[in-house]
Length: 193
Image (cartoon, rainbow, N blue to C red; front, side, top):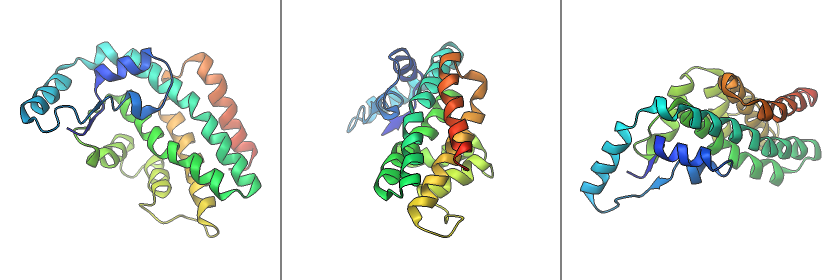
């Protein structure tokens, strides 16, 4: 197992507050590497966790993380307004990995290997959903829909993915986080995106 979105790690990550999604959701990285029995046991233990017990922690994690990624969204907006390719591209890196992780953790999706992260994220949101189309544009799996510099298209895809992620998890967003998230969504709209 190279990476598992394991409910036990979600609880630890959510209880620990905000932070890089990959530090919490992917807490079981390369565990049991080179030890087949360790991998089997680890996978079996993750599969036996009753997600219902951990759903509140997963919801808190998703809410806090989406709130935290507002900073990256503001960097994208600022970079687009200033024509700063570097700022836009750098800010989208975290969003490209973090927003799908929010969705996967909140929905309790176990990832048996990092090689299926993208496939599972798309399946969780819906293969033909607006979320998936924005995600695919952001990560370069589909062509960008507009002409112009690529960094602009990537930035717009990141903003769209943030909006769609917020919509998919809106029912679990905590009130304090909702203030920041709503202001961020409003700023995206005010900027004309």
